[in-house]
Length: 332
Ligand SMILES: [Zn+2]
Image 1 (tube, rainbow, N blue to C red):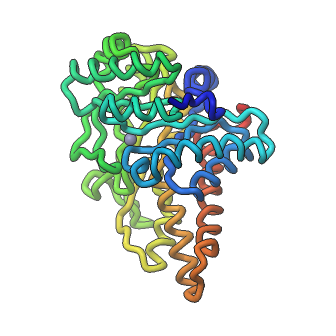
Image 2: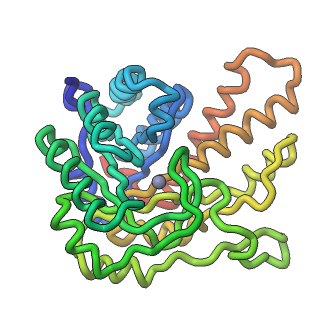
């Protein structure tokens, strides 16, 4: 058993309380490589932001759970080395699908876990979440649950259609499951293709797709039911069109990739939404920089030559999100 406290990590409890009260959201960036981790920590330290580093089951299999534990410890020490004496860093399991996986993460240094029972019948979702909460709270680990189903694909999590969260269920669900935060479905979606062209309008000037707006009416009803309770948005990449254009200009093929407009996420950050998940934008920033580099420097083959600009591009994106979208800067 390795407690996250030995690694210098924190759980989400205080962090979320401050974020809800302060009208901002904590960035939850997915990672599975050294360069992503370095870029996340550099961005968080430079902006004085708390940060959630999260890994899905697939990412944990890719990176290895033992290595991740030491990476998280390394992230804390790295933040201190960069001049942040008290970094607020969470290591979070994204989309845990079984009690056993959540337990394994809790036993190996995670400070927060998500148990995603959203595809189960309502009562089974409550029972599974409650089981994880009971174990997690014994170790002062916080638990995110999900109610409602998001469309799209995220590693092994996929669903063809979304089902918005029902506001009339959230009090019963949160009180009976004991979860610390709740991921809801209000129209965000996993992946770089959040909406089909049929679901969007097309901007006549640019030819780019304009996605449908988030269901803020549902968010506000949920907030009214559970005042001050931490709400989480998954699938909240914006799919920056300049990165998509760079990828496509340098041999890539991502036609009609589309995300959530940043002004909507900015608005959501001011509400009880206190954690916003961003994964695809990091993938796009990394891929765009690497494609461009290979195109312009076909003779390069030292990974540092192309991973360095990739890391810089991700860091720029992370800082932009923290300062311009979530508002979590200057909170340490
Ligand atoms: Zn998700």
